[in-house]
Image 1 (cartoon, rainbow, N blue to C red):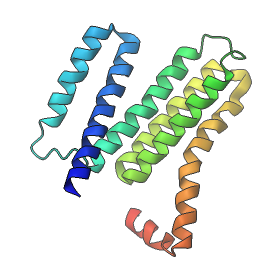
Image 2: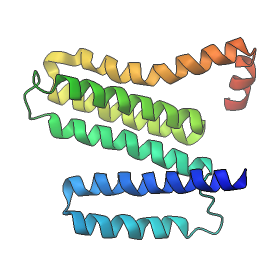
Image 3: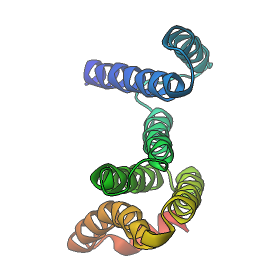
Image 4: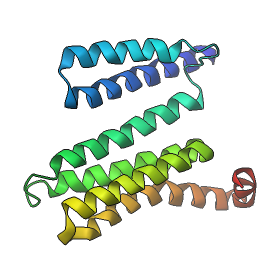
Length: 168
């Protein structure tokens, strides 16, 4: 129903604001980060045709989630690898997962997010963990999990050809 979509849109907007605040508060003090997050959300919603449950908001949410995982990974690079191994793996896995979901939400914009996130993840792995380059496979696993699930479902529904026709 329309009310359910509005409720979903409110939740997505709240999550975008929270992720933006979390990202900003990593580098800045909490009060300015909160002020900027709220101001940005007012500006973000001031568009002529802002629809809170539109794919654009979901794409923004997934992009910020992938970015947050990469920022956390970047902050872990100077720490002890053995102590933070699980955090590193989870950050890579979820960054790939969120970037992949962004691609599946809107292929044209999501492809740029997927490529940028992949480049950033490979850069962080290469320059922070040269002895463990296989860590990049966790990012790739995060990317391929949603693709695998969607492809299995599309094949079971005999819709894989239609899917590729819509994208390309």
